[in-house]
Image: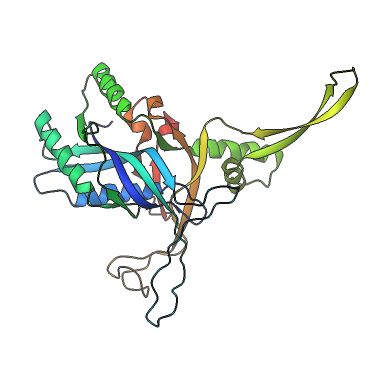
Amino acid sequence: MIDHLLLLPRLRIQNANVISSPMTWGFPAMSAFVGVQQVLERNLPDDIKLVFNEIGVVCHHIEPQVTEGGFIKAFHLTRNPVDKSGSTAAIVEEGRAHLEVSLLIGVESEGGDLGSAERRRDIAQALYEQVQGMRIAGGSVMPSLDTQKRHRPELVSFSAIEVDRKKQWQRLKRRLLPGFALVLRDDLLAEHTATLKKHDETATALDAWLDLSRLNHECHVEQVKGNNDDKEKEVVRWNVRRPYPGWLVPIPVGYGAISELYAPGDVTNARDPKVPFQFVESLYSIGEWVSPHRFQTPEDLMWFVENDLDRGIYRLQNDYAKR
């Protein structure tokens, strides 16, 4: 259960990376925001003794930098300067978007100095100013346009009394509207995989993932009576098949090892030769965009790290489907 929750509201991010994996795009991977949480914790001032455990993200606005019109979209790409030889540098496709998000971070107090409202307000403001100088998902945090100071950072200490705790969460949820938060739906992926296997034993989780990731149009032929006579005629109708309600999207959730764990320095040209190295591939699942007013507890929209080092699994977890 979360005892303290830090709210960093309405962060404007310019040119965030929206190519979240080799197979998905549209919104930064949640691992990018977990990275923000870790960097923010590592750079805490000496007088702030906090531990960051999980993070939630509410998206209020997104503006992908793509061409408009038609069924096919293309990213807006930059023409980079010439290389050392003077020839034209190759174009590396980069997907970008402008975002407005609110970050919620579950924290624990090591020093026990969150008892006073003034102290919590000072800590929230200090961390809000610190995140203004960071990069989030590869994008730059822009100055706030909120000249009226309506969206202030806040560090909430939840009451031990359940009734009061619910009131605090209800008040905080109103600050997150309008917007949508991404949650994990591993349960729908597993359920749909089992459904496909009933009709085709060779169906896999990949088939279910692809089926949930697209709009499936199905053709139905119906017998309809004419307006002027009673003769029946065939009418073709197209329907969109949706196995589950909700705004479902394919998402990356971490990485799986495809090699052994090498000792530091064993792999040439590794980014950091002082740490162990392992080759990995992306892990995928299904996510759902949910309005914050539907969350019963703050834990519903929180993401946290859940690794299985013995199996080489490095992934993020969210418990929304288990509640």
